Length: 126
Ligand code: HEM
Image (cartoon, rainbow, N blue to C red; front, side, top):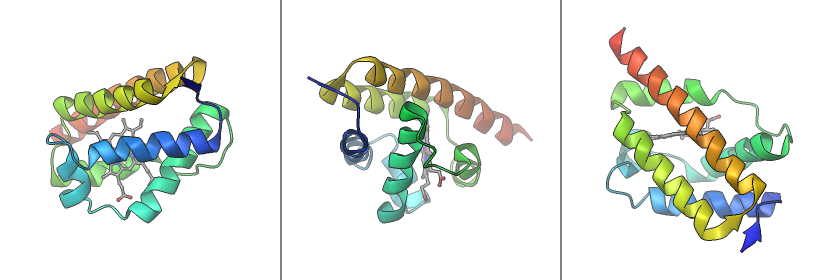
């Protein structure tokens, strides 16, 4: 099994992950129906996002939290959705990569997902 160490590796990881996401019973509707994602734009952003997190290459310049609030307003993003997102992310990593960066990609996603789930829940209470 391979280490996660290049932009090409991230592209492979992200592409494999979203291939699972778009077919997933629990969360695909957010991407396909709610946000109607433009994949040609979304995927390169995600490559840069993970490149920034894992390799410190500051190629991503966005606000990941902000993007999810309008989606959450259209359809509540709940814990079960984040759990499923994480499940697919972990599975995709474990199917393809080993090593420190692979572990870090899981660890960081858990922290971000936890914070995001909390923020989405709070936003629905206001
Ligand atoms: C239930 C869980 C989640 C759902 C349904 C979801 C859905 C989405 C959707 C629909 C977009 C917008 C795509 C577009 O129209 O351009 C998006 C963007 C994004 N998501 Fe998520 N997301 C989830 C969790 C996460 C998590 C846990 C992370 C980080 C670890 C994350 C990181 C991002 C980033 C970086 C973007 C791009 C933001 C930008 O445009 O700059 N998402 N997400």
